[in-house]
Amino acid sequence: MTAAATASLRAGAGRRLLAGPATVPVALVALLLLAAAIGLGAGRYAIGLGDLVTIIGGWIGIGPGHAGVAETDWRVVELVRLPRLAVGMLTGAGLALSGAALQGVFRNPLVGPQLIGVSSGAAFGGALAILLVLGTAALIGLAFAFGLLAMLVVYLISRQDGRSSVLMLVLAGVVISAFFSALVSLAIYLADPTDTLPAIVFWLMGSFATANLDKVWIILAAMLVFGLPLLAMRFSINVLSLGDEEAEALGVRVERTRWIALIAVTGITAASVAIAGIVGWVGLVVPHLARMLVGPDHRALLPASALLGASYMIAVDTVARTLTPAEIPLGILTAIIGAPIFAILLRRSRNKGWN
Amino acid sequence: MIRVEELSFRYPRAVAPVFERHGFTVPPGGIFAILGPNGRGKTTLLKCLAGLVKPTGGRIAVEGAMGYVPQHFATPFAYSVRDIVVMGRARHVGLFGAPTRTDRDIAQRALAELGIERFAERPITGLSGGERQMVMIARALASEPEVMVLDEPTSSLDFRNQAIVLATLRRLRDRRGLTIVMTTHDPQHALEVADQALLMRGGADYDVGQAAAMLTEERLSALYGLPIQAATVTRSGRRTQTMVPLLGGDVMATARSVA
Image (cartoon, rainbow over all chains, first blue to last red; front, top):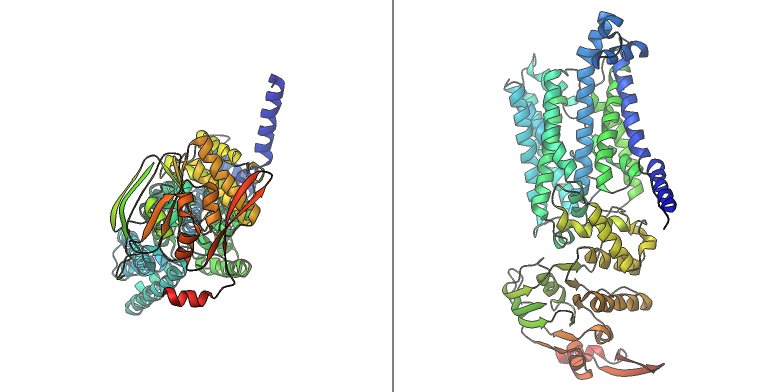
């Protein structure tokens, strides 16, 4: 082959790379930036695009910075909207990532963090912490502990002959969710109507309204500790999704791999529940949308889900705080949007993947 | 090379073992066929070899890496054929790793070796049974095995695809020196490719030996409880031995007499 032919082949490969697989990641990143810009600017106190650019320029040391905009604008963006945006982004990315990983690990596109009991367990842990007035650290700790416990019990119930059937898993998830929901109700019933009762109720409905820098660090830490390993093991998740026996035959240590994935998912879900309450459906619906964009390969699906989840969460949160003068709790919106989408997906997928 | 000694398997809480004290040796580059009626533990024995099921007794020694081709393949995810074959590299990739360039090249060679590059980018869910079986063999091949174990590789395939799979197995043995163990319900397939055959009759009752000596009218008729007759077809100088089960007879009476 001549040098020219080789060069043209390389150029051809490069073109394919640009027109093909790279377009979707670029579009997803662009979508996230757009959502972030709208999220920072929109609200009861609207900030124009020009001022926003000046403020962001100021952060990275370009342009007039602080001096170029009104003090109030600067403060609103930096102290109110930015932490909230960061928490929303990381939560959305984490939940979508968790959902995509779970769907692979359980070989079923119809499971999510909510379905396997993690959310309800974490909800009870958090409600307990609020009831006993234990503070934020305990809230996060208990949310994680009970999230893990719930997931463990679900896994043990559904296990038969060393395998977990998906139907059993989902049914066990329903059982454990019902159990922890009852415990949450009990916590609400026992709560003091003047302070802890409303605190539990509003926390459960989900919101990023109380986002601050501390919460950003917590959710960021969860994403670094649990999200990065989950992202790194996405090829192993591919192999796991072939089924236990095949994965074992291909040389993957199935039990160990699955546990690592489940603990990572529990960590992310519990942290997001602790920070933002129950924000349902994101982990179920977003991976589906991502799969439509990049296909089923988890090597592409996990990062795509994280990016799309971040954009989705920011968009929903922006709607939640701008649609009406009073904020709509986030969990209500994600369910109102997510449930119908999921119903459509359920209809379309029929019976596939349930056993 | 595989050496099996005194191999037994019994399900937990079961009264009788599925098979008991089976022993055989497959030399390097040998093709070994396992035959027997349903439920006599062919698949279980295969899974013991592949390390997927722990035998309740006996010893297995396998020299070299093993590739396993399961009987059924089902994932709800529409992975591309290439993705599936790359997963054959899992053993070399590690828990937090990703397939490297070398892994992708090896997967590509496996696709080429089986002549299935043309549908490498198609989703596995849209393939025919025959195409899918070739993908499964390619995936096992991508793990660079010295031994390949296949569970009924020709079942649920049409005639042409049966022939393709059998020819592929023979070629892999001839070119790569692969040692192959397969189960089958078709004695003709065993006669076509296997050097040795194991007949599993249940419990400790088995026979193992040269394929031609094992796959006779008498032994097969006794094995399956139904008269089976050999027929030789010669065409263009090539002799094909077939084993014809006489399906029209009173099978129920035979079954009663066997019981």
